[in-house]
Amino acid sequence: MSENDRREGSETSPEESSRKPPIFYKYAKIMKQSPHYESFIPRKFQSLQQMNDFHYNTQFLTSDVNLEFYNKLVPEIYYEMCDRSSNYFYASLILSMGEFLGVDPTDPEQTGCAKIATFSEMMHDTFVICDDFCDGSEFRDGKPSVYKMYGAPLSVLSCMQAWYQGQNMLLESFPDHMHADVLKTISHSFQNLAFAQGFDIGIKVHKYIPTEEEYINHSVNKFFTAHNGTQLLFMLKDTDSEIRELVKDMLDNFGVAYTIRDDILNLIPCGLTKRKKVIGDEISEQKPTFLVVHSHYQAKNSDRLLEILRMGTRDEKLIREAIDIMELNGSFAYAREQSKKYLDRSLAALEKLKKFDHFGGHQALEKVIKYVACRDT
Image (cartoon, rainbow, N blue to C red):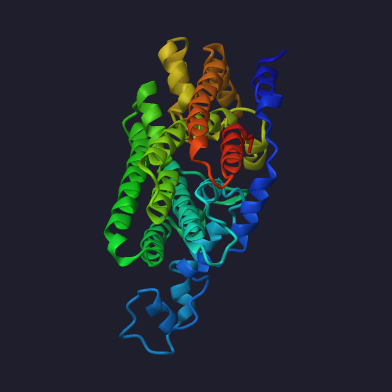
């Protein structure tokens, strides 16, 4: 069996089935039919009054203003990314947590959970735009990256406008006396997501290879979109503190399992690399992934691995050489082992949540976590 066969075969065990459970299609349907995206950011501004309704200052503009130009500043860029979304990982986490807390995501009278799920997807989509720019990624979901289409300055500024606009509209789901706490929660999440993005950039700029502990901490910070969504949901539902602590433990460990899984999938033939049409693009982007970190500290051909990594090469032979070094150092096996360890910890925290499940939502949450942590796309 070749090295490649061992890497590919290890990701297709029955335990780690990549088939998407029906619950995901249920949540995807809810999100695709959701009116909340356009309640946060309209697909097109139709009038100056509508721009005013969304808190844009237009007092000196006249009715014959060219709205097409203004639509290119935020809506067009945001929906270019939003329309590519199909997995709805973050929304599914929020909606399943909502069901656990007794919220029917299809009930038009209970819109708070669906709005939080929408805002979480907005956070994710806009950070993906920034992430692609920072990584120099040329393609996303089979199309040119958004910043490649519209330019980096306008794309990043559009993301910032989307964050503030979404935040302002989300506040309407909460009573006035909670607004300060809601803003503090969102600000804390943005701070850690920006810290995670800065970490990604910094390790490339300074040619720094983090320790495993630093990488784990970084993985938790990258997952603050999920933390933000659940914290907002807890505020809306006035949730017990013990539930909050268990969910934090569940998400912290899940975020690590999710990130390591992503790192593995980037280096093997699977649904993810088939969709990207390339294997090992994170090597081209000079990312010291979990497998690189492990292999580097094993000190077997680590100098050669770092040499290839810092080339930023797209040469398939060099990328294959780097992958082979990580295989030689046992990094694939170690990464799978660690991903499973953190997934097991996440599921253990979820198991402790069972005693609080008064609405039958525990199974939906478990299916979402198991699929996302074991997917191949």
